[in-house]
Image (cartoon, rainbow, N blue to C red; front, side, top):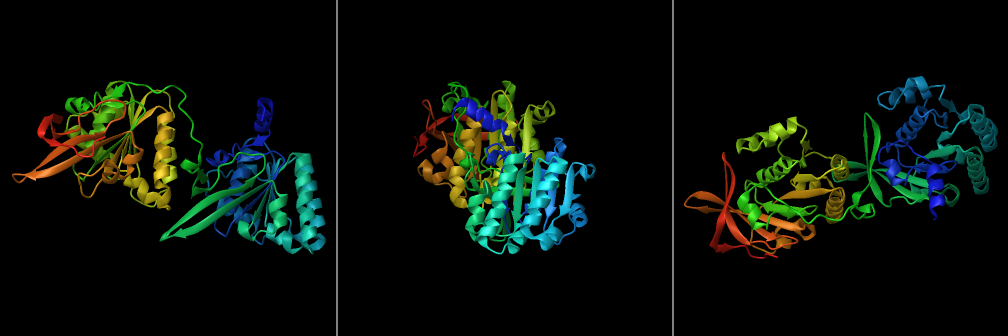
Length: 479
């Protein structure tokens, strides 16, 4: 496509105004197109259509919402009143709600077409929702008649520039061919059980003249309405806008930075793996606050202990986490171990990282994402895509991985996510003379030489200290 054609196509797109949905749709709906939204009861079709309708009204456009269902408009509006997008002042001046069932019952599909066309012309509507397409299909004596009805709608949309959304309570696989072939776009909303969980998803099955995101994407419905979270690994990888930097970023721990050859490369990803209590979180906080000291933003994402406990622990070893928070140099994101959505957390993190400047990110406990995904097979792709996107946005990422037991094995088996990481740091502990001792080792470090020898790690109220290497202990499996 030529540049002029691409710019024209973008101008002819009408955003839905729903966070994430326009990203999945490649910018929104084409103006004057007809799209069919299907899904089982409770999947969010009515909320989706009304949310787009109110977003259009907020931009000054007039929209028409026609129902062919038994539910009264007053009842539907009462249900919508709990959402933040709902604005009663738009009804009926910018949003016209009307029932088409009576006309359909008396005059059939031709009468319904006449009603829709007249209403669009009288109100100058640029967006129309027809809720209950299945009811219209029941009044079609033959498949050919119903196909002609859909083709007439498509022609009307093209001539008037009015974008149309048709809603039907069924699955995409159950749709007759006329419906699939005639509309410009086909979107499926789904609500399914995954074990004891119920998840909502959206799939764009078809969208003419659009480079849309394939596959299923997570949906969340809250007081703001519907939010769509594009599946991260479905997005095409983009190279960083600037050439990668070759400088190294340290932890602010002299012995550890020396072990790593000065630190980790800017823009790299590092897994720090070890059993519980070996010091992963405090090393991660040291990494962030060393960046703050050098004028770089620090972003913490945690799934376990609350931010207050983390800040308190960091303060206890002499790290000024509280001061960095007060100066907005450190951001703390925290998600409890509940039924969250991995994509939602990932996009929230990327929003924080989108600002200009060098940034350091510490993800405290990778199993937080593991507990959220409903398809464990996508986990490796998800992590790889997230780390690549963080690097593209100028972030250097540290990720904690808890191991139940530590065996001196190759890095790919000791830390499952190490395959995709640029660097791997391991923490282990042993009992000696009835006291536990901590050790730290660099299993692999990208872009330079490192010392694979295990070193004694001490954490006290005076800070973190890494001693000189012991000739008797060397980390196996180093790369």
